[in-house]
Image (cartoon, rainbow, N blue to C red; front, side, top):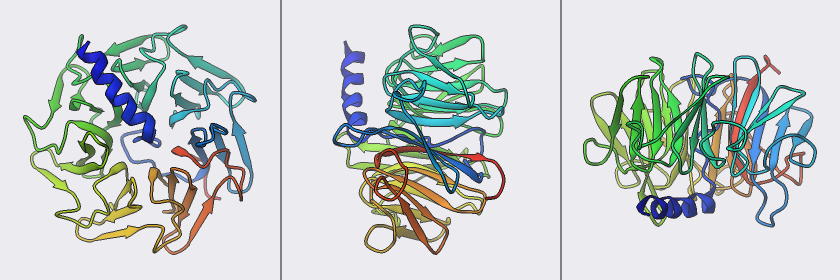
Length: 349
């Protein structure tokens, strides 16, 4: 009963914000490529729209339940494997794999997926897919077999897994509602507020920089108004918030790191904050072309363009000096409620 109550409370939090910490993660490095943008959305507040929009720089193509084999229109995260197959995790429909012509859906009825409500996906160097669910831990799929890890059968900290990242050594880092769990394939290590400098045990975003430092966006107030950032370099923990840094607001729900090592934090209500390890710069609707101050997803292409998915404002692209926004009024974007962005590398465009 305790588990059910705990899960129910967190489900309410996530359904309000539809937080998607992982925008696109195909390897241990941040998503950096240029080519085709795959944009995952949820239905607008009127209940209409939702699905996936593909943008090649000129043309838009939308995939939704009415015109494709995608399992659900509420998309939570996207990843692309080494063969170019797209993986869409959904809220209620399980996982859909797209080969470019054919669709395959994996759910609790036809596979070993632990739960159809999936928050996150990561793909390791061996091609294994790791799915973080909203109440039943992590499911691993090697293309044939499924394995589920949860607190009952492993060292995973908690049943709700909102974020996954994989470091250069192949360690998996799972952001849960009980802290961060690291899995090296054999042993588990959990970091929480009791045994480390983690800001809070509700971890919603995970990113890893080129030096191997881990960055965690953690919920520090159950009323959903405070998410501090914790950095872990393997020895020392550092927390950043509005009291001790230039972070725009204590509500960080998306993290991305560019090729220069700048950290980009998407916040709920404060826009985007950039941190170069010394100075902070914030972009919001008052001082930039950002479409909305609720930033739910970030992706960075190899040209250095930043793509920000927003809640209700569509997608804003920033090239370092100019902003371009795509929404349902001026483009083929299927919904302005953007939850995830993944960029498929097809070369320069």
